[in-house]
Image 1 (tube, helix red, strand yellow):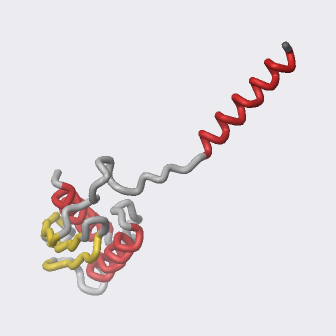
Image 2 (cartoon, rainbow, N blue to C red):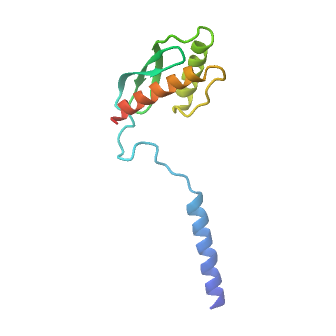
Image 3 (cartoon, rainbow, N blue to C red):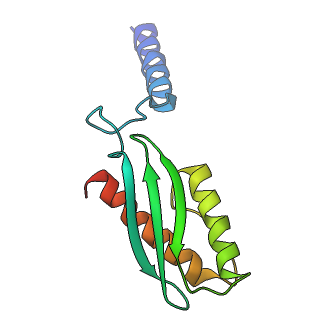
Length: 124
């Protein structure tokens, strides 16, 4: 009886370990459809020196491109930082990125506007 109990305990631990360490394979939306409604979306957010307007192009499952359409940020600092943030968002496919020191407001404006476009593309 002790051997049976010990065997059961070992099997239970093995099942828990295997189940807890397995990876999820769900990469799409919860309903099995696309993540976004493909198209072009525009949003504006407050930057350091004024509004920052972005245009974001989505496919059904990715952010394809981000363009700053209009801004009044400092040339050589704000615009360079915004380009850096855009590249990072496109690479990581998320707005959870680090802002550039010295251009925090410009970066946050791009992030906020892109998040607005993401919500539009998700139908929120």
